[in-house]
View 1 (cartoon, helix red, strand yellow):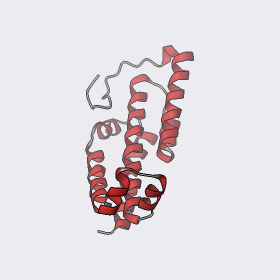
View 2: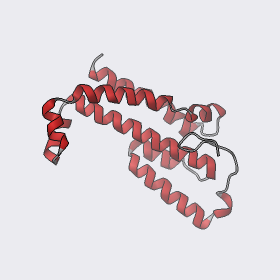
View 3: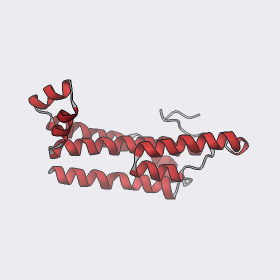
View 4: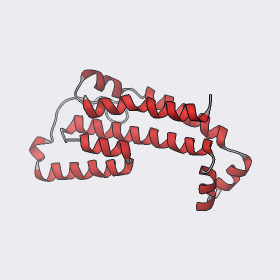
Length: 157
C-alpha cells in the first residue's frame, strides 16, 4: 500500500463522520456512530503504522531533542508528512466529536464551530469555547438540556 493511497484513504475516511455531525446532528444514527471510538482506533492504527515506518535512527535522534529545522527536515519526507496529516485528522475529528457532544448536551449551537474544526481544528475549538461562553452569559436559560449523551470518555451522563 502506497503512502498516497493511505493519505487519500484517510482523508476520505473521515468525511462521513464530519458530514453526519454537520448536516444531521440530531439523527439517531449520527448519535450512535459518534458514540463509537472505532473510527479513532482505526485512524490511530494507520497513524502508528506511518509513524513507525517513517522513523529512522537519524530522525529519532534528531527528534529526541528537536529544533525547528529538524522538524522541518523530518516533515520534508512524504511518509512523515502523511503521518503528521493523519495526526491532524485524528485530533481534529476527536475535537469535532467533543464539540458535537457538548452541543447535544447543552443545546449550544455548534455547526459553525464544527465546520471551523474541520478546516482549522484549534480555531473550531476556540469558536466553540467563545460560543459556549456567550450562550451561558447571555442565554443561560436556553443552554440547559437534560438529555443523556455520552461524554468524551464515552460514559453516559
